[in-house]
Image (cartoon, rainbow, N blue to C red; front, side, top):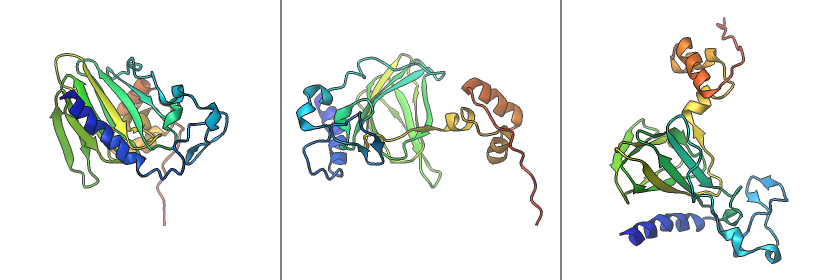
Length: 221
């Protein structure tokens, strides 16, 4: 069962590679050169070693958040062999009741495979339709590029999942962080979300956000 699941898991990643249009075997990231819109420059082949294609960053979980979960990724910024290949891998750990809150990857679709536990996962389409499913061990689900999605541990023990994304640097924006960890003002958030100011301020305290005192003025024509 395990080999079959991981076969399809990595087929997804390999399909993304087919879009890279590489004219060389690989383009290992040269971290001494600037990172541009299309990725890093290529390290000279004579300086490439097998270690450029191996990543140990998923051996342990990432830093646990206030949502009782953690995420660890191997982007091209940490994993030089990914540069130009259009793939990323990651690890998600959940405590009991742990949540990966609503977030989006603007540059990639995501595929998740559950390794341990029971995870409620879903995404919301641009038609505002929610697609939600309870996933069990070795279940796989895909989240289309750019759509808000989430994962929640609904089991009675810790949960573990691995993900693959179709970009070497897919980007990530969490809805809560964008609103309450940024410097966007309380008045703008209340106007655009209909939340009351007290609730916004409390959430800013939790997430460590600030807020410039922009005043929303009525415009007279």
